[in-house]
Image (cartoon, rainbow, N blue to C red; front, side, top):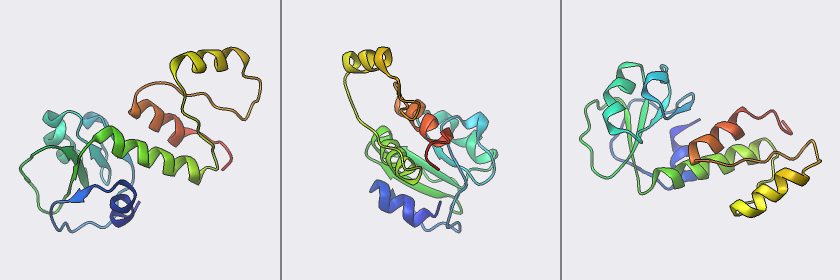
Length: 139
């Protein structure tokens, strides 16, 4: 994804002027980061490891000192909100329709769901992103 597109979709703020213009994947686990990935720094202690593994971009909340000017440093007011915006974008790319509901409605839907094209998701912002990103639904 192009860095400019990510920033436009999420309303996050680019802190520096990096040498990169795009990234390959989004990852929230510093151990699993591969060269070219964007790292969501839920754990700021993992930033250095993500950089060593080849992260091209780091998204963080709050204050953080830039340690590599070639990497895109992106400030987010809320990492879950940022990730939810990207999840919605991925769902639109895959022609998925998403409905948000409370836990009771979700449990009821799980019991009566009969449509093979309906995907029911529940969990953290990261698990929802992974489910949508990995889905071969409507694509």
